[in-house]
Amino acid sequence: MNQAIQHIYLADDDSDDRTFFSDALNEIPVATSIEEFSNGVDLMAHLLNEDNTKPDAIFLDLKMPMMNGFECLSDIRDLSMLDDVPVIIYSTSFHEKDVERLKNMGATLYLKKPSSFNQLKTLLHKCLNYISTMAQNKSIPEPQFLISIL
Image 1 (spheres, rainbow, N blue to C red):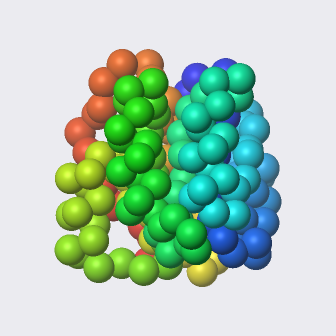
Image 2: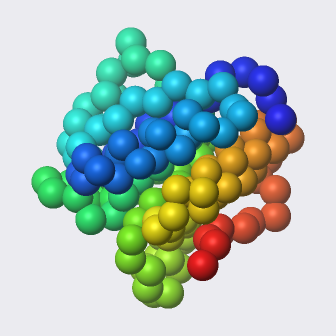
């Protein structure tokens, strides 16, 4: 795996879920930095500010106030400067229609939020390996759109 620090953005309105995610990310053997956003509006404002570090990946909750994950994904994919940034949907809900819609909108992966800390660590490690492979190959490997351990 690439040893460069991966800049991760997480947009999730649930502070407990953000803490759970950050704690799991800190325990996997990958150098990362994380910026957290409690809603899609703040995420988009940050992404549009060219002075900010471009993320290596964006983890995006679907059900957020003000601007939901579908709206954020649409806006992100409208920005050519973010064409190469993987967007991973990170949600408690899972509906096949939504998953297919998100895939068609340009989401890279879909993670159903696990209930266990160890499962989350495993999923995050898999995701970051996948992202690293994408970056090294400058292309998207065979899609593994749903990564989940149930």
